[in-house]
Image (tube, rainbow, N blue to C red; front, side, top):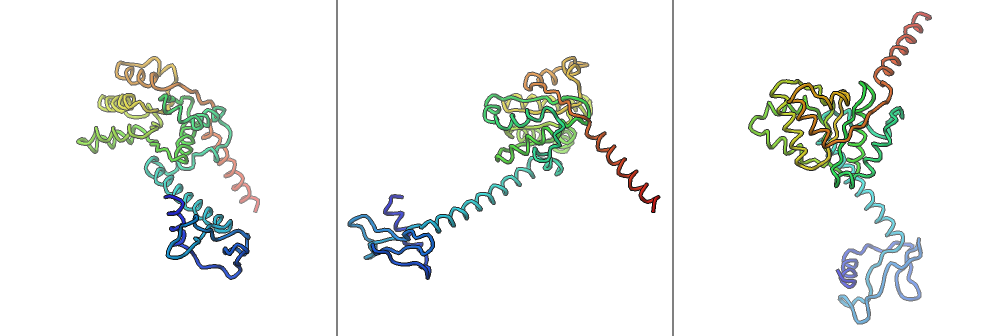
Length: 283
């Protein structure tokens, strides 16, 4: 719109004057609160149905409008993040795997933050990660933090595991290609607990199909696994070799060395129970 058209629009949507508003020496209406004009004259020679002036935002009106617009943007943002959560997480608990909820016991968590911060370059360079390390060190949580942070940026992420994928593929024989294509459409795919799925000939073939399709999609992949780097680099047979070779070609290994939080949690629960039982005996 040109300035004149904008002025006509403001005139058509003008609101009633407030009781505290007043007319200035220039003949224009002024806001009684911020003392700024709520009207402006049309450019010389321009009129609209005999009027020589049109409404103008004062500071009060502008602030109210900006506040409402900010609330609307935040509402739409939260709505989109919620949609991405429902679409991308196979377990609702994953929504709580965030940087804000991190206990600070994973030394590598800074790498997760950097992955999110450098996402545009990560995406363009197709940089993936294999998160390996001992059981309970927070590999899945590390990946979940990345997923949640990217969803906050309105980036679509899928975090799942091969046990679920294989079940879905078995249930939809005719739509396998479409299913795998959908997995590969996500800007980031996270495969949790890799290596825990059943090692049948059918299962390994489907695992390879998913990994290979993701490779050809040229989009980043993050894999969490309890396999050691030595096991990944020295597979037991040809079927595993072609899967692991693809993974290592796509993803940089990152060793997660946090303390076993599951053992720590179990120990804390045991101590709590002992305290409760001892308290009962002392009553």
